[in-house]
Length: 390
Image 1 (cartoon, rainbow, N blue to C red):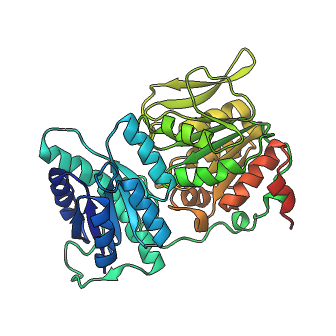
Image 2: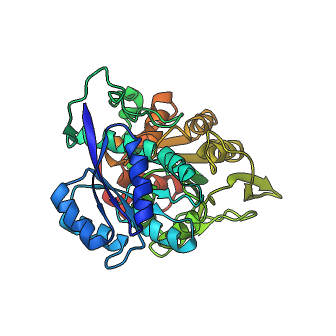
Image 3: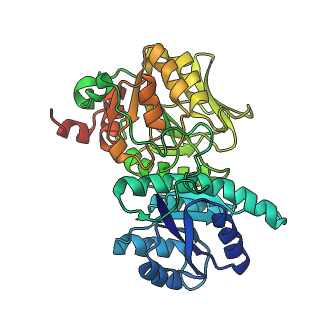
């Protein structure tokens, strides 16, 4: 049996207590320290060596982004869960934190009832703690603890319904899928008219590597569903747009799909592709969640399969759960191609694993190979693609 050591970093004494109360309800987690600013946090991280920290971004003396920068520069081995307010400023800072290596963002509840705040945060924490436990177990970096096998704490709280394989050892992938590795050889040039991407936990950091690698000559539109809270997708689009040769924007209802533009589905709504008067548009609507996801990868992929059929390239990337698996099967059945990000380059090998195990995947590729594959399938010339040889 293993346990995780946690440190709470927040400048609010009240919220530090809320977080400690939440973490006390999570099995196999021990809060070893607290800190009210970034300077003290770094000192205590070095002293107590926690497995993960909850990190407020808006703090005196040294803010959370500066803490993340120091953690990265010093190579300190600690997972970071950002705890953010649902504001425009909070979204901007949170997206930056995710691109700097934070694992995920938890939203600060605004309910005046402290008990409800604890309940809401506990739900968010259970999922993330399960992921951290799995990641550190696989690296062999979780500290053992003596817990009787008949103890109620002997089993880790499972992830939310729909998450696949978070605590289980990786299953072998389909031999056919696993043998398909070289996008510059095996994906036909100019074989797609659209690329659709589904991504969740670990997504902002992965997209920060993927999208800047796509050439300005990309000849297909790219539509992305990234699981995030409301207001965060607009910040993500602005952040990525500044780093890419392609234009990156948050999709709005009625957007015409234009080659060479990347559209990020807005959080809190569903997005699908429709044909109207011979043109392809994005419809943003208030349809209900699919498997608790809004936006949903399955919802987007279903429309791509319907409108583009065999000319669709679908990509399932890092994230918890199995959103996208059914949509990927529809694209594959329509004659389109499906790529799953490989386990080694994923932050969380949940969504890609589910798609692979369903048999819907044509190619299992690394993060770097995915950009080559998208470029090749679009028919665009890519400097990186031309440099890769069999």
